Image 1 (spheres, rainbow, N blue to C red):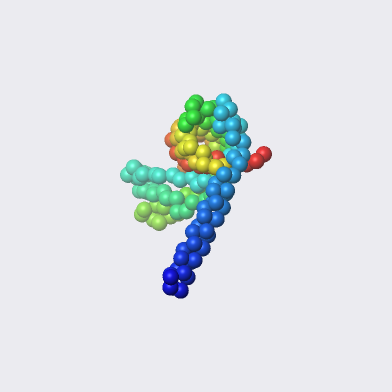
Image 2 (cartoon, helix red, strand yellow):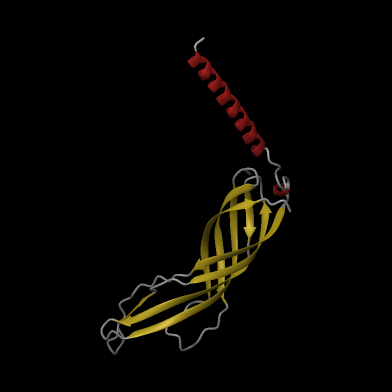
Length: 192
């Protein structure tokens, strides 16, 4: 046997050993202990949510011209971040689906700019809102992989604005609304 073949065969043996040890190490990492393995079998879960959001208005000019000849156009030039907090109750329907109710409150602000088309006059208004919400969603969760489980949610959300309105505001909004909600997330199973 030539020296080149001996070196090649030793090299192949070393590569096989390294691959075997690497596969064994990967197998050990994949066999991690699952945290709280039976928690998904409970009929209901409690939790909380904290998040950020923005509020938007889409306004369409209806062509109205005042008796003084004014024609106002409204726009929202930028978005202000808002903050939301809420509770969470999740009722298990089966292995994949659950019904989720998450009452909460959304704090936000919208800055509007109103311009008269003819004179160029500008008016500004900040609309602060504190909305009490009651979302009712269906949740579809995938299979659990180790200690994470991704999910999709969708449903309807009733919203009632409890912030104080001023009679001098140029733009008045309804205090109640119904919205459609869509989202995604991931359940993370911690040891405690």
